[in-house]
Length: 613
Image (cartoon, rainbow, N blue to C red):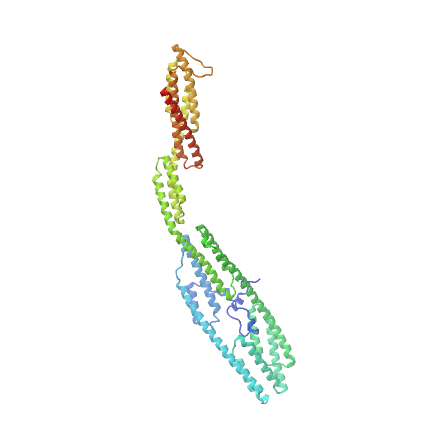
């Protein structure tokens, strides 16, 4: 299937306005008019500026070559060239506007004085061309009246009883008048030509002139008509189908103006001429069939694009991302539209109006959406700025737990606030997260230092345990007991150790102390000559006075250690509040705290019981 792009530009330009009025085919058989832009003409103006194009157009309209019809292709080419420059400038300004941070929907292009001047000149040309067409049509009607009058007088001349020889001058005068009359309306052309030709042939048939003169006249007419046949046959070689068709109409005009040939040659020579005409008319019709088919195909493509745009449900678009995706789709469809040629003339304006209306409806809806969201954006921005200010007020706090909880709440609140304008979104988010990061970085550094300190404490406690384990209780039990008390105080005075090591290091210390205490009690009792009681199970032997006291001390130490662990866990809760998986870790620590507090309550109950006893 050929499209308009496959047609020779000269042929395109040739059919851009109207068909030749003196066609040999019936007016009802004329193909539909198709507007085609002559790209060669457009290219001839490509180096002119907008001002130069307007000036050139004004000059053409003010001083047309032969007629306003003759400058139509130049007018259209200037118009196309001008809008290509103007549209390119609009696109450049819009891209610059967007690159500088503007929204595409907010872009507007100021009125252009050159464009207005162009439109005014085009309207002037349209008015003058319409007036010219009206004059031409009026002239054709006048020509039709003149030719009808000539036909009437020719009929009267033939019907007159006078000698035919005397009628020749009057007949030739009527022929000259006929040739001098211009074109008539296309709808009357064939009928008028046929009536005249019939009367001319009748006159020649009735003419009782000298045989030699008649034969000479017939011979000359035959020679002329054979040349017309040859000219018509040669037109088949023309590559420009429209130009060939126009030339054929001129040949038909010459044929109708030429006198008859001998009767025995009339059918033969006419058949030859008609056959040559049929070839040109067929090519001409096929050419416009292709144009019509291409135009109908273009109409289908453009209709499909309109339907795609009209199918977009703007009331279901609820985010900037969704609006932008559909905007990109329409921009691509607009680019595709520009690649499609003209639709049939009677649909070309209406399909473009439908396309323009669909695009305008979408972008108007988009503009309204953006306007409605500006107030929401402003409100959301104010809320987020307020959160930034609160976060900035807390970023230097050293109340790790409470501040961590507050910042986490601010972060949760931040997530409940809607979007803000894109150009402000990054800045306000960076402001908020910078304040949060400043606090949590300081907190992490603090706990990192604390972990370092706890590791050092762990090493110190291990050293104390080794000293307890190597304590000599045999040589001097009293001194060993004093040293054991000092080591216990030293162990308890050392700060916190890592949580995961705390229970193990405490158990190791307690076992070492209990082992040395048992040994010391035995030695001290032996040294004082007191009774000694050995339990086969390896339990310590205590006298009735020392046992409650030692038990109370042991329980108080356990309680102190448990309370220290609870305090450590509480601090760790604040540290874990901003960590990944904080929820599960927090639950685990809360359970440990509850367990430790339960143990503390049991120990407190035992201590109270010992006090009562």
